[in-house]
Image (cartoon, rainbow, N blue to C red; front, side, top):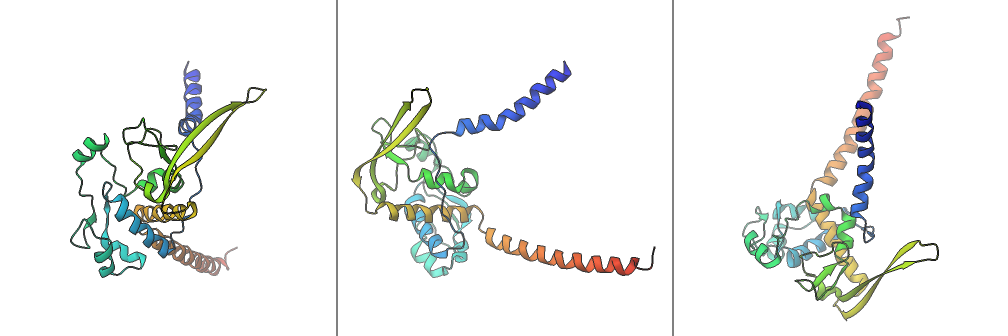
Length: 247
């Protein structure tokens, strides 16, 4: 009996990742072409974030003065990016209360401090590019990656309005396939390439917000590994010197 119970436990552990992947299966994710070293992209993403996202979503673990890491001066931050705070040392909190967010959208808009670490850059990049018009939704918008999402398409003026269609096919052998299609309904102020670049910059910034010290941490890690390598060589030479007369 114990052997069977152990076998069932092992089978469950082996099948759990596959079950999780199956639950997450849906719209295929595009690879986010982000570059955490591209300061121009990060600055553009910060501008998009404070203009379009900070009205509902905060980043309460991110302080405005950390934007100096992106090559911005304190005066640039204060004059161009601080619309909901008075001091550059304050965190990027949203003015809207959680109660108001729940009454307007059904659920309070989540804080985006670590959204890139929890969802992943590819998910965010695809999600922000797959909104479509849905008259049956409360907000009038839906999303191919996140069906029945409560969030409206705040970037629709940039991307435009689109319709989304999913058609299931089956060949003679019974193999099913899904064909997805997008139909433009109204143009936006940006073309497809420009909009994708804007989303790329925004996702790049959200990745930075999730771990502002990532680049410096990686640089320190390289230095530490180099020092450890030098110490290993010295320790090995010392070991040979101590043991050279011992047979």
